[in-house]
Length: 298
Image: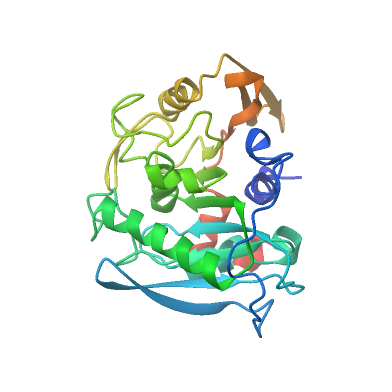
């Protein structure tokens, strides 16, 4: 199996209840929201929606499982696209709405303003405005769908992955069970353990995935397309300290090309902080799909 295909399932697996956030989800009773009981006519088909936030019209899409049960609380996954993109492309390229990944999840794809999320120097809105949009979006989702409020997750790629970390570093992050940024551009988290990052709780489950040869979101940090990025190893060290992690272990695969680091953190929780690095990978495969024929990969 090529690492491209192996990485395909990592994010989907990481946001399955009990995997990414064992200290948060295992043994936690589902918390149903007020949207339970409402009928939706198009389960299995992505639908498009809008809401007003900070005086601006914002948009997002929702994909319900084909077997959606209006009385069953579902985990929710928010997927944040990269720069110069929209939620539709993130959905199509990652295939995260397919039943093999999300048969028992509600997938949500928000759209950034001007094709980007806050934090980069090319962003069109402030961090506060985009965080307010996330808060307003979660409120709307809870009122319209049968959401398990204890299992809300966020993932994203590149600029979107960086914004996932921005959420994790804010009070808004307290509404999420775990975060899985991929090839994240961490422009807003570049000033040490506490500089620009105040997680709502500790430990806070984070899983990060990155290519060692990413040519736009550099693994070793430096000046990126939207500002200065921290070295990923340094950034992971900050999260290890934030989560009071004590030890780590590395599991190598694919002849040493893929490295999976797992930390043991506060309270002896193993896997609350995890990292996957693929040495010879540039952009993650689903970013490449934007510019290449997806049929050639799948």
